[in-house]
Structures are given as C-alpha cells and as structure tokens.
Length: 534
Image (cartoon, rainbow, N blue to C red; front, side):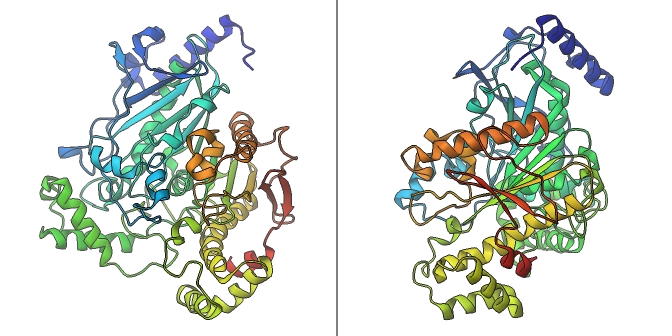
C-alpha cells in the first residue's frame, strides 16, 4: 500500500512541515521539520499500531476562557508520554434509553461508559488521540477524524467502541477528540465572541492541529476525512456549512445524525435569558457567569432547557446556533451550503434506529393500532395517517410496536438524510453516497438499531459482542463496512471488492447501498415512506 520510497517520504515530510509553518508563522517554532519519533511515546495497540492519547490541542477553557473561542497551543518540544486519555468534557446526562440496571444496560457501559465519564469529567477537556502504524519518516496516510456521539450533551473520543487500532492497521491515521459540550460549548452569549458555537470551534481547532502536526504521525494533512455518528454526524453536517472549517477536511461521512438545521438565533437567545434567570444573574454579566461553579451551571442549564417550548424535530437546547457568522445560515435548509460543494459526502442510517431509545418504554411490544395512531398524531398532527399508510406499505410485516419505532426513525433520521443527499446531489460538484444498514443484531429486540454500525465501521466486533452478538455474522459486516469507509477516505468513493458497485446518489435513481450479509444496491428504498416524510 505504501509505494513511496524512503527518500520521497522524507521529502514529503519536510514539505508538509514547511507548508504548516507558512500557514501559521506564529506557530512555526512549534512545528519542527525534524522531530525524532522517540521524542514522544504512546501505547502499543497491537498489529504494529501505536496509540497516542491525551494530546492537548488548545488551552484549558477555564476561568476567563470559559465560553470563549479555543486558544490553540503549539506542538511540545520536550519529551512527552501520551499514554492516558484526557478528561471528557463536562457531561449533561440525559435519561438512559436502555435501563442502566438491566443486564444489557450494564453491559453497554463497557463500550459506552457514560457513568465513568461523569466521574472523570472536567472543563479542561481539549485533548485528542491518534492511532497510527507509521514509523518516521513515513507519511502520506489518509487521516480519519472521528467526532463522537452523545448529541451535544455527552460523550467523548475515548469510548472503547471508538478504538482506532484496527482501522489504523490498514494504513490510515485515526484521530478522536473531546470538545466542550452542552452549556459550556453552546451557550449563546453575545458578550463572549463565538460562544454559541464554542464547541464547534473546538473541533475546528483540533482540525487545525491535524493540518499542522498530523504529518508527524504519518498522516497526510491534504487528505482528511471527518466522520461521526448521531450527534457526531450532526457535527459533520454543520462543519460542512462552516466557512471557518473550509480546507481543513476533504471528505465527510454522516452516520445516523443528519444535521439539516441548527438552533435558530431567537431560540438560542430565549434559552440564554432563562439561563441567567435560573442563576439569578443580570443578563450580560459574563464575569459572574464565568464564576459559577460547574455543577451549579449544569443544573441551571438543564432547568433552562426544560422551560423551552417543544421543538418537534427541530434542533433545540444547548447546541450549535445559527449566528450569522460561524454558522452563517441553516446548514442544509433550504439547500446545500456552498462550502460543501467540492466535498464528497457519504450519509446513511440504520434500518431500526429508534429501537434503542424505545425498547424500555412500557408500551414496547404491547402497542396496538389505536395506540399507534394516537402516538403518530401527537408527533405528526394531520400528517399522521398518510405517514402510517406509507409505513404499512413499506413494512407490511411489522407490528405496531416496530411501526412506532419506524415513525421516528424515518420521520427524522431517514428524512433528514434524504434531504441532505438530495440537496448535495442537486448542487453538483463532488458526489454523495447513501447507505442503510439492514443487518440486525440478534441481541434483544433491537434489530438494526442506533449505534450498531459503529463497531462494524471501526472493525471492533470483538470489543462489542454485547451489542452485535456472537457468531461470525457481525464480522462479515465489519469487513465490508470498514473497507468501504477506508476506501472513501482514500479516494472519495466507497467502492471495494467486498461489496457490489456502489453508485453515487442522484434524484433520478436514488441508489442506496443496503449493508447486509449479502449487500446490495436498491434504488429508492422505502419510497412510499420517503415521499410521505420529506
């Protein structure tokens, strides 16, 4: 896979360092053209891969930097051991979609360790992690930067399910990162520049770090793919619409998290007013707000969010804000952003996304047609009968319980993904590819549920048996999906000999790769539902 000679690798290494220094002359002294690999150490991750964890990419956003844009730091010159993940951002835990005391709930903590993150959380959270099999002076590997899930409230780049070793063994460099979340990352405070999108600016700062320093780990800063799931997919969607991120990545993958819209400015302003009211602080007193203990700020933010009116399928709460600058307009509504035109995009969902969120509901497995209609009417209003009729046509064998999960899966995840794919295809430029994971886990009633594709994309089946089940089937999917994701990162198209030819998405055919034990391409799958929900 690596065809360059050692001489050409050294030349590319020096050239990349020179370009980074020219782009950021203020950081030139911190971007050495020669830095022996033994100047920093990581952990042997197996298969010839080394993991470097807990690398700081910006100053701790505390004190006067709370709510402020991140302040970047240079690459350290002294010997460092990067062998421990940095702290996760302050978490804003939401009720678990799976009973945390159940056998499955306890098991899922091994791959999505939310409770452990709450114990380790810190405002000092701007750290990233790198997996690579490169040995200096090798360089030129595609870089895959993962943005974690958890909405905009929880999560970290250190979840075991995100371990990048198996992808890195295939000659890519994998990066995961932490950034500010919830009120710390997205409180819209006009008195603090960029505050409504500080968490997104953290990601931009991490991508700038990748541009300037990833060559030291064998990565090619001119071939960077951002990818993420759920909230991470929404972050990818928004980065595609942010001028500040232009040129920092070259391909994008949105998994089960289409970010068609962000929080409107008026809704963000109302939330800020309620936050100040909850804390008893005069509006605009940023100094007092910065002095509030983190625990009290989290509690006040949750109370402020609870006071906001329901937003339906629109983005609400402490999340990225359409501020006219950092996020100039609604990212994918009514059309694709111009900043995305030349970026190849892959987007998709899992067939049964919402089972993970609904399986613990008391009605699950007991819902009848009357209850389904009542639920649909509460969500969709007068549109409910038409959507239910379409769902029954596309899923004729499913019970009311699973039609209820489809109601939200296809009313939100599928509809948003189709909208992004349609609008990306309509603007011309680089291609967009759409997928759906059909294969379902044998675990519980979850089928092809939310998060199921993550261990398949990362080829981490053995780390996630609690979710994917036993036996050889999940590994078949993992080989297909990880190969397609790597191919996309290398070339901008996801074709690999392990799957049938995958054509790009266009309005005329609407070609979708259906990942299964025998994957196939289907034109306009679930067409009746698509027409009803989009």
